Length: 337
Image (tube, rainbow, N blue to C red; front, side):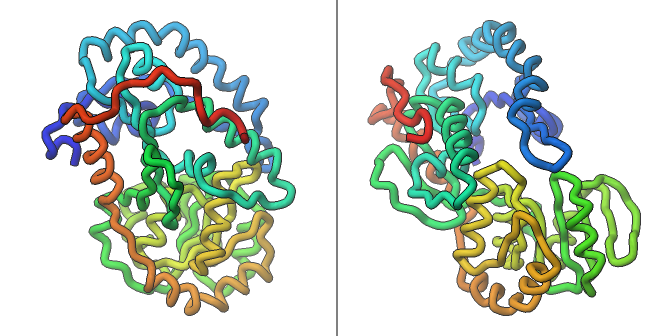
């Protein structure tokens, strides 16, 4: 959509996105990864030490990346929750538009569940450090919010074209996606009378009522044909499930407050339920209320192009010279405060 609007792009990315975006003018960088302990809980210590190589790359590769960006001479940097590019863009005097869902945790009023105070503080502090001093924040959210800040624009999630082309139907299987192995949860599913198609283990085997799939193109078709979705509560999976009107049972990753917040929104909107430590009773309760969740989802609509439309609006104002001159101000969003 950016290219169709006449913009020339330089894409900076890492990981599996390198192959997915190979058709664009692309620069590959190193990214930060999350690492977990044996209980599936996000480990800050392990993540810190396992990312030392990425931090070293930021120090040594910054000059070359800055040279390439200076040569490209961008008018605006659109940053999707990545720490290196905003700092280089700022050094070049290039305005920054932050485009992600994580900044909702800084700009929206939050009710932090008991026991999640430390995780919430760490998450909000990290978000504030990743993208400081953006001229605009375009924030994807599952539910509309009003912030009163003219620099903050709340938009619905983006949904991939592959998902939009799916004609949803109510099949007999439940699609499960687990970012981390969860043997206890699988044991609970084995006790259920449902049939489950499971992604995340990247193997093709059948174990009773559990059918494991390798990651591939058929996931979107099976997502469209399932009766419900269960899994971790990142923005991509939850927004795709809600777009296709699928009741959702969330299993938020431990110590990841963003996932806990998404799971809470799903429950509050009556689109499904969640449990940090799923039990058979919780799973049975979810299936007993599928019709109720479906009725709520039937009334749920969002424009999956609204985010890019807002980005184009913000960029066009830059082109017209009305605003978006890079500012030299103190970071406003550091830390939980």
